[in-house]
Length: 607
Image 1 (cartoon, one colour):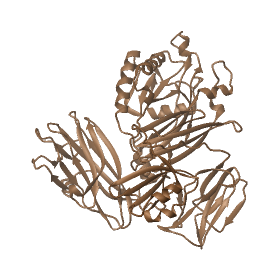
Image 2 (cartoon, rainbow, N blue to C red):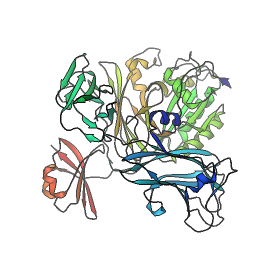
Image 3 (cartoon, rainbow, N blue to C red):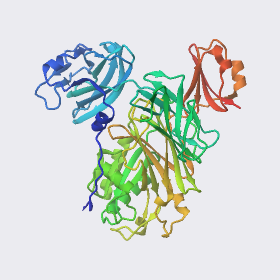
Image 4 (cartoon, helix red, strand yellow):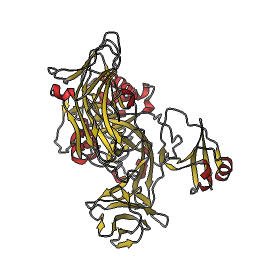
């Protein structure tokens, strides 16, 4: 088995360190249940009255609070925190550590505003907890003046073993000022400048609109916008909107009175062109198609690596859900490998391997192996990719990729749509197929053509891009990320010459990681093509009608009319008697009318 032949120095920050550095504001609750006094601050409810419930266990190394099984009853036992009080509306980050058993346990996490099971809202469910340690996190929304309780429910079936809870931590994120905006910054003066724009297509229609907040209150009058244009010119306008007519980066800050956001500028990039995201055919669906990411570690100078390559060929030829598996190959065995690059090295560091050949699924070290035979790798792939596809995806991904001939750039627009609040990070990789390089360990020429070789990565450090400025992403909102790759990052084609033909073998692979570092979902897109949001259910067939017909048909008894863009963004909600005020710009929308127990959904066309 061949070992790593050179050193690298890329620092990967842990999840906990990132949260403590970037987000932590105030610890409201922190316990490891180190004493009976700490445990007694929590309320224990034996909801099924079988006298088997959460108990303090000072001698266990797995956690000092545990639930032991009942031979006949499934668990229904609650552990509810002391009251947590906050002064303002906020979002709480709840982190907790727990331990399962060989018999597979089940744990649920809740929050509520009263210490009673019936008042609790489910935050997370953890099934099939094996005999190992886990760490998870979730979020709780708290309005101004509300108290909150965190709760954990043992929900294991009968005749199991033991479920442990070892630590709980609740951190106050503080109020999310300008929470509906994706591009925002708060200055030392307490002012927050916000906009939804990160990228626009330069021209007379590239109007960027801003909002300014003083604390939680929006500034309606007296605000000025200060702009540094791509040409280095400073401008000031007496409103909170600006038209980006030229290509380049614009830097914005705002002022009102003697205060400004000059120490927290926003940047908006004006582009010559930007590929549009494909339409979301099911904006209200959360039945997201789950895909898995196969990470291949091989090198052309590795004599054992053909075993891994052959196993992957066999897998794609025989696996019945191979179309749900995306593929990255990091050629990082040695810097003299013609397919070696910094992006491949960044992926290699994230896997944590130190030997070749290797494979990993979804960046999950439990689903990783190295040095296997063809058969051994084959068993690994079938077993672990099947397990990965059985999980739930909390994000959906859409892609659009184009080659800009004038600038010789590959431009990518990526949309991420969460179905639950979370801290997600997006990485976009440029990969290349059909690359020629002689392979050690075999004389079979077919091994000399390499697939899915990673060529470049955005962001380049491999840690992924924040989608919402470091704040938790909200459910149902589409977050866009734009990036560019230099086409010269692609290597020579099979004939040893670099031509634009290599673009035919270029693809984009985008993947979303959760804050614990594990992959949530992945999508792939060919060059000059799109990948729409993918669902497990079929798209509903909505009739398309004109806006005039809708205005005549809708009646005043409608409780509410919601209008969505095709990407799932809510445009407005009005009552039925306000339908004449349904002013929309040109385009196609999804309209949802609520009338008593009846809900009707249609597409509408606005000419």
